[in-house]
Length: 219
Ligand code: T5A
Ligand code: NA
Image 1 (cartoon, rainbow, N blue to C red):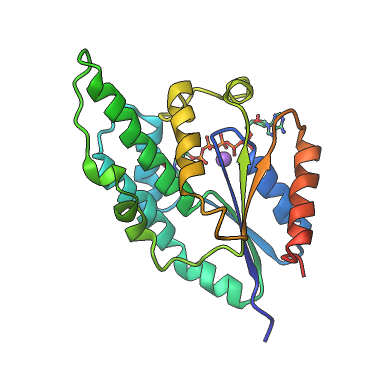
Image 2: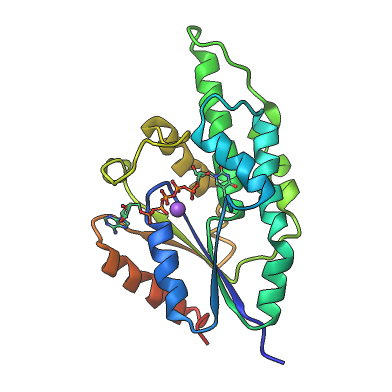
């Protein structure tokens, strides 16, 4: 039987280079598989895709949160099986995105609720980290998590910015704060923050590979 594979997660803000870097990293291992969340090819993924691309699609924040989590559970058995077969699985977003984006929606709607010119409701569950974590409990834990961070000014210059629901500069600022709040960097040394400011694709690839080697995940 082959030794268990490893689960490597690349997290980060919109357009921080997650998809670029997770493809490159996947190609570095001979026995590897790239999984991207949300996976828009599944049943639940197709609803998420509509929600993200069509602003007329209405979902409560709670149900959107649960759908993103359910989308991860759709892939749970595949992940476990691949790990048991010795695969290196590279994840392009996962549970931290789930928590950070919902938390950011809460902070964002709270700001709007304070602004008397905008009518909106604030859903308390979406601001409750314990509630947000609940549906993801039990999913396979990554052996290594890399969080790609960069300044918002640099991010909004990148190609494709502004096409999807969450890509407003003000919202991304809150998303960044939410990630930094929920990532347990102090207590969990499998989580690394990677500063990608003013670094080209090759430089970021090298930064990531150095961490992967240092952590011994490439054994
Ligand atoms: N979401 C997701 C939730 O709310 N809950 C959840 O549980 C999950 C999983 C879609 C949305 O869903 C939300 C978060 C998102 O808002 P997505 O499909 O991953 O999630 O969408 P994006 O994050 O927008 O994915 P992108 O593919 O657009 O961003 P990436 O992957 O970070 O960036 P990438 O690699 O595609 O690069 C973007 C551009 O920048 C260039 C690339 O060539 C590309 O043009 N680039 C660089 N340019 C300069 N220097 C570098 N170092 C560069 N690296 C890449
Ligand atoms: Na991506």
